[in-house]
Image 1 (tube, each protein chain N blue to C red):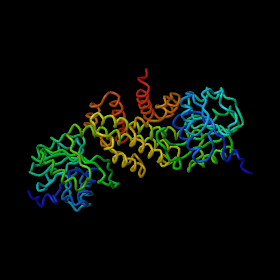
Image 2: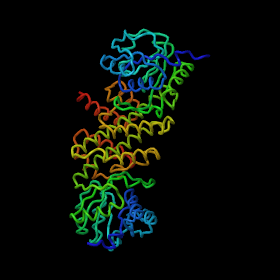
Image 3: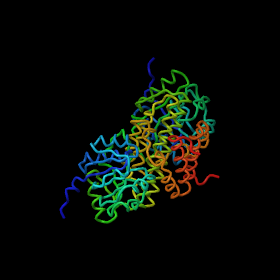
Image 4: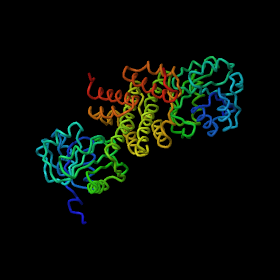
Length: 266
Length: 266
């Protein structure tokens, strides 16, 4: 079977203009995996901003999404996917979503060829990420669609892993703890230091070592700190020095760590 | 003023055999900052294990701590400091503790020369850390003692910052969030993945990028994830899929993140 011209440089329609949509739109064009021809976003300003970066058209009405794309990349907030797609006509194209937690079947009404294209990474618009080191999790509505997705994906990503919806959802929950919640811990630390005019940078060697350690031994074995030592006096002193929200987090996490290392506290 | 022989290679007595005591004992000898001559620990086995690494004596009775050291490094669990020191005779040496949160004054009964020697890092016995990149926070009972501490410290650490007890305690609380609690998030992620036989390594690029981003922009600006997007459906799906403890953490942190970005939820 010869690969058609469309598959060598498919016309891509991107639905969404958030962090993931932005990173993938730029990567698709830069890698030559495809050409993004249209960007849809509920905000026409956001659609235009992203579309302008790759010379694509911008629309903000679902009915205006063109029907002639080869690949449709749905990178909307999970809550918005169903209502947006209900206003777009099905076609024979390859439909993909980029969500860690949505079931593949949300796309089943759009085409017979659909699947998942979930990059395990944190994206922010202002920061470029080297996607070649990122793992892409894929799932396809059939083995041949799965192959098609992998073939598209490998032009952008180095590591591609097939994962069914359950496995992908587990990955996503783990990633929320590992990435989103860790970052939030750093955000709290940043603000605590800022109150005393101490730059967050002073923590850099500590953070780098903490991560390096977690990648060489199970993080549990590298756990340190007052809760790990069961140092109740320090825990109380720290907690009571904090504003209510931070205090609640400090107490809960310290209790959970102590429960793990010393058994349930009464 | 000429520097005495003692100050060029002071005899160091280490009280403690935990992660910090171990890292500093090895670093003191390796750097030539001093010679560790005795290790005290409540557990004689732990004292012997550490002492053997540097050819020092090991004791487990406070009354057996020698009185002829030049520097006493107190690296005990905070809770154990007062009761241990009450059984050791004061002398004219330099007494230092390594705690992030203990006041300097806990040492005031031991000597006129005392202070704080707090390295901002996470230590585990099985892992060697390059201390030259670590920041050491110092505080001394007088300006000349402060100088003496800095002079000793700079043979081991590159960055030395004077910090009073309040500032140091703030640093310590921030470090608990930034290091200990982040590591705990990774520990949870590790276990969630292990249940599905997914290696923690698959998260490495995500974790590295999350940290790299947090060091180039305020972590709040780099916050991503379901709670940042206010994606209540996913938050509920994730939370309800988790065991009770992880569920409580997931719900609390998601709520806190949403409160920050969308205002207090009712």
